[in-house]
Length: 135
Image 1 (cartoon, one colour):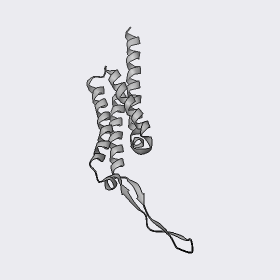
Image 2: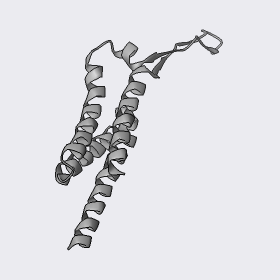
Image 3: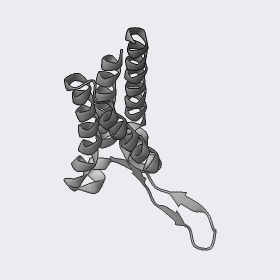
Image 4: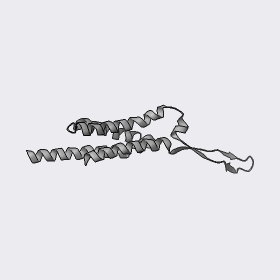
């Protein structure tokens, strides 16, 4: 079950990054007040994606870091499942960064971070249960 949650966390991070890059996030419009009457008239609003708004390749770095962190933790879960401390650290740092940047890009990656925490916790519980059963 922990491996499936790791894969799901990686898929959620990829989906969060894709949504962050292509979903409309920035709106712009203009309003004018007619002199003398005080009536305010607004013109048409437009929306832009993050890629359209930033015009910079660094935005891909902001999207790639959470995906790489999640994929690395998932790879570690498959390659070295007994190494739980590095997985706890990576999942905890990822969750902390998501909460820290929660109102910007963190909200897109919060499901992935929570899935990683649950995955590591599930593997930890399974390992302690196996240790009690064998000892």
